[in-house]
Length: 350
Image 1: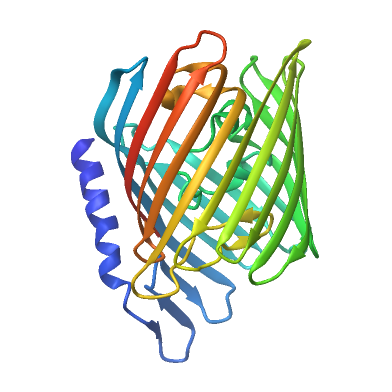
Image 2: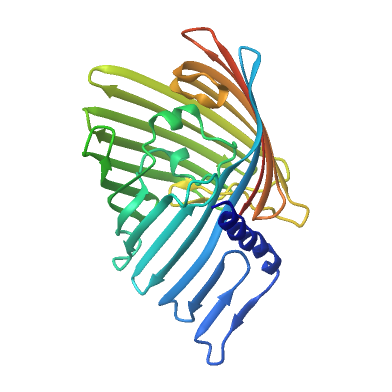
C-alpha cells in the first residue's frame, strides 16, 4: 500500500515539470493536449475530453489543550487524485483520497448531464450537498487553512444523491435528495440559493440561503453574506439547527487582505483561489472569529459551545503552489477549557 501510494505521488509531483509547456495540436487539429496545469486531452470541438489532476497538502500541526501539548507532528492533510471529462453533453468526475493509508476512499464519484445549459444541470452520484459557502468552496481555495468549526459541525459534506442546480444571471440555485446514514437508511433534502446584486471584476456582494431537512427530524438553516472589493474580502455565515426540539447555532466571520493587490476570484456562488498577478507571487493576511456550537477539534475542544480567534498568512507562489500558516486560539464557553492550534502547510493543487 505504501509503495503504491509513493509511486502515485511521484507521478503527481512530476506534473509541475510540464507546467511551462504550451498547447500541442495533432495534424488536422482534431486533438488538443494541454499540460499547463492538470493534464488534459480533448478534441478540438470540445465534444470529448479527459483531465487528470490532484492535490497534495503537507501539514505541520501543533495543538495544546489547557496549555499542554496534545499534537506535534507532520502529516499528509489531503492527498487526492481526480479524473474528469466529458462525452458531449455528459460529464463525469472520479476523485479519490490516496494518502494516509486509506486505500483510495472515493470523494467525488458522479455523472452529470449538461445538455439543458448552465441554467439546469443534473448530477447523479456522490457529491457535495449544497449547503454553506465555506463548505462548497474547495479545500484548495479557502483562505484559512482549515474550515471553521461552524462549517465542520453543520455542513453535510459529500453524500450519494441526485441534484438539480443552475445559474440564471446573478442567481444560482441547487436542490437535491441525498442519503443520510446518520439514522439507518435515512434521506435528506438539501437546497441553496445565492444572489450577487453586485458583481464586477473587482467587486462582489454575495447573499446566500441554505436549508436541509435530514433524517431523525433534523432541520438546518444557513445564512451567508460575503463582500469583496479589490484586495479586501469578507465572509460570514450563521447556521441554526433543530434536532428533535434541541436547538443549536453558530457563527463565523472571516476577513482577508491580499497585500499584493490581487482580487479573490468569484464564480457560480463561491469564491476561488487567489492567483498571483506577477512572477513574485501573492501575499494574503486573513483573520477569523467564531462563536457558538461547533466542532472545535482542531483546537482540541471537540463538539461544544466555544469562542475562537485566529489569524493566518498565505503566500501563493503561483496559481498551483501555496505556503500558509494559521494560529487559532479558543475557549470553551461551558467548561472554560482553552485550546489552540498552530498549523503550517505546503500545498500543490492542479
